[in-house]
Image 1 (tube, rainbow, N blue to C red):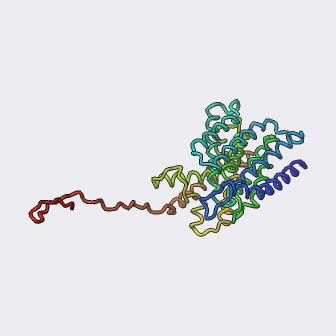
Image 2: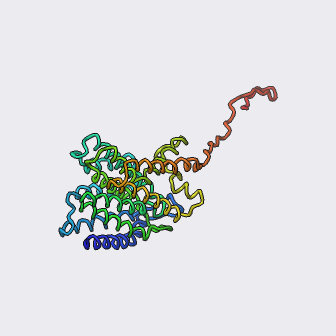
Image 3: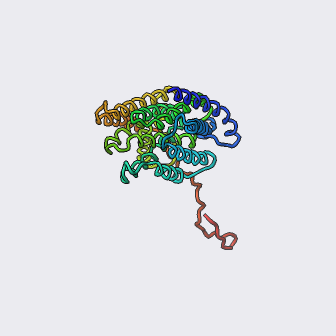
Amino acid sequence: MLYGIAAATTALLLAAVLAALLRVPALRLGAVDRRRQRPIPLFGGVAVVLATCLVAAAGNWTGVAPLLGMGRLLVAGAAVAVLGLVADMRRVKARFLFGGTAVAAACVVPYDETGLPAGLLAVGWIVFVAAGFRALDHADALAGTVGVVTAFGVGACAAAEVMDGLAVLLSVLAAALTGFLMHNWHPARIALGACGSLFVGFVLASAAVLTRSGYELASSGGVLFALTATGSADVVLVLLSRRLAGRPLLRSGPDHLAHRLRRLGLTPQGTTVLLGVGSFSGVLVGVLQHLGWVAESGAFWVAGGALVVVLPLLRIKVYGARRQPDHPPRPSTRTASVQVNGQLRVRSG
């Protein structure tokens, strides 16, 4: 108990200090998010990853809080973070980014407990959640807030399964995200970037899969969806919106949950708080269902609530009218014969 408090405090302070120190290097290296009104450095994820890995590794090295099989998850998460860091520094195609995440996910899924078919589904779901957190990073404090709430929820599930190493790792991650949020609240001075958002989504989704391994597939699917309802709803909304508009699915645009709520008049802080409350509601249902205190139908209520939010927001117009290319008038190729001073000349018309 005392170590958990000390580890969380250390991770919080370390992430806060590193996030402040890494702003200048990110600006000098050009690792900035230019999709916003002002460029924001993207090395906040590096601070979160370093704080989480260093504190967790210190606990395992000293023997105070051994990872107990969680080392593979931490190494795979670090590999995903490195891949995301490359994407923050240079342009990387989405298929390579998520393909690498899928390879890392395949290394942490416990196939002996889930079976091969369910294990492959788990790999796809981990990539889906990682992509969801990657998308949430477009708004100030949103990915960090949802990550903290989800980490506490999945950590509670891990503690109920007596997976102490995983519970400690998730508490450290939640603390590191809290330290990062000190610099990411609106107006943000630093952002997670692909490095941090993919790492957070990957670790949370993988941890949730580990806590539900051995359970029946349908009930596990309900719990996993409830734990990540906000990110899942955002991805579904974006995919539906772009599909209906005939836009490429991987082309970024102002079509996420936060963008649409802002168009309704909410402030950036209000949008983050509202989506954070929605995330907490889904996580609470997921934890209670995992503990057996809520019937399996609880996940259907979460899904219904997500649809109630997604469908009306889908009607909000977020794409501008397509501009037709301006074609200059093509020169005429017609010719005419004109007789001048008894000579026949050709004139183009």
